[in-house]
Image (tube, rainbow, N blue to C red; front, side, top):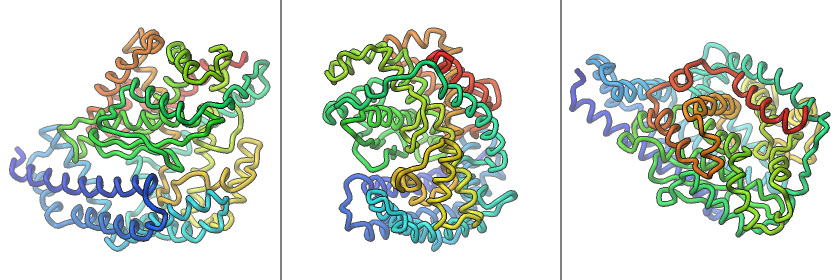
Length: 500
């Protein structure tokens, strides 16, 4: 049996570490929402200090000794204890290889880089951001060398976001998905039916969008007593547990879907955070499995639910009431418009079919950037070439090209693949939910999404990190992760819609 006092001491220490990360997260959220522009250097020092404190506490001799004691004395006897010890061991073994100065430098550099990226994106000037990217790539290569890897340096970085994933294995999955997506995109391109996308450019005042978005997020189950929604350059969800979850979105009065589906996407992340077991907050048992699983929750609510016909059977009258400009638009036309499939420059606004191709482009570029085979100054050209090859379009400027995403300024190389994996997880989970809830479509059509949320919470959220991602998929769905449910979902939805 695990010595109770040793375990209590262990839990106290890892909860303190998590509290430091909560502070770091709040500082990052403030930077993206309300922080004065000139405060970037001060914020960089603040975040670097907190990151350093959290790192030193994790790699302390005390934590190492407690891990060894717990592992010697039956940590596997209790699933909660086993999970907390196993996952902390994984974090400890990674962290102890990294010098604290390197951790602090990355935190400081990325904080400054985010501020510069926002300005560079606004001005569509990649050269302004490039020096920061050079520095971040060098730092992350150092991380990869310290951590170690069997395949390529990128593996060590991706492992932080999707533990156990290997770039070569992910490439195999992506190749299978791409082989199915390319002919589907081609078939849709030549389809006899075309949506009227001008519907989506009709004027919808920002105030009305904010009110409707909040109404939808609340109806899905997002608790605004434990969260909020604000505006940022790039939509995101910031939260480390169920009691304080921050969502952001962005608005365009001539393109309402940007804020609506952005809000539903981030609310999906928020619902996962709010669904974690409060008894275990601050420990791995109260934390999300991986970013791929996290992304599955946002993509499921945004796409399988939010872009589904059943959802709009209930919510379309309310949308028309909020926006008179849509009063003469039949539901079928609106539904077709929000599910239009066409090449697009912006990833977060991409349709379900082409979205994965955006991720594959970034995945390829990141691997080359980390390996050193793609120079920073060549990124805009490489990006545009990739867009032309995958989509047949070339971004007119860097803001709609290689500067559109915040991730590289954050130093989160290895993060992007989790978005495409999230699509696969989402489709497989939603198929399992439909089997478990035979009347799910009818429930959603009646505006009742609570049964789906409850199913997700019982089967995914409440487990915390008890299972790794590949294990969780099998526990929940009875099968290994496969691209087939995702492709089946796309074919079932889009072929009839486009008459192909």
